[in-house]
Length: 302
Image 1: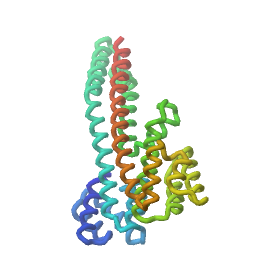
Image 2 (image 1 turned 60 degrees about the vertical axis):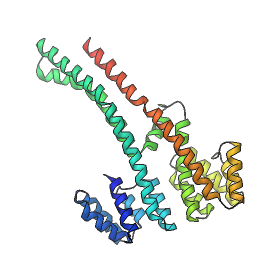
Image 3 (image 1 turned 180 degrees about the horizontal axis):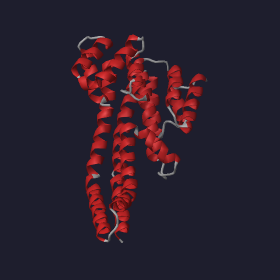
């Protein structure tokens, strides 16, 4: 489902002054290929669901994206929230497209290896069905890995990283930690801008963080807020804020009543770092695939 163009178009119609139901109706008319999904979205809105809940129910927004849109609705910043979510989808789609492009060469090599195996088997008098079966045994595991990687990245990089960490596919937890903390601070910044009470916001944040290790940190953060700690102190004591200098900057901003702005700057810096780290990590995926193709393909030729 192509969520990015739909979200961008909804934002444009809302900017033009239309209500969500009318914006969805116009988008439906503009995008006949998406009519079935958009009709479900219109039905959900008619049944009284918020736009955020309707987008989540119809698959146009994941849990995090729906939470951002929901905060935007509450704060009167719905168009900004839709654009932010659409831009996230655009970055994700670009990364997946780049990865798929880099898999073309090893896939061509794999096709040549499979073709050579089939020709060699037929020349040796092997039945065609047996030769095709042998080729499938070589190709399907490799292609399955490639499909699983790109599908996971297209759906939810955080879920893929959590699975990789849980199964020990990634020894270092640095990238996983960056993803979860970026998720947390994205929601926290949106809530702060919307004027959501931090204690209430912490309760909602706890329901959106799936990983039990990070959910415990959010619970400690919420408990500290309820004890009367400042937001900065609660974040630091819960293990969600790193670095003495950063803690001081955020504490000063909170004291001056500018914590929302400080969180936005922090999130922007973390986002840039996360993009660089993610690009570096995902650059290794095609290399692993190359190695698998050449090792398995080479072994099959022996």
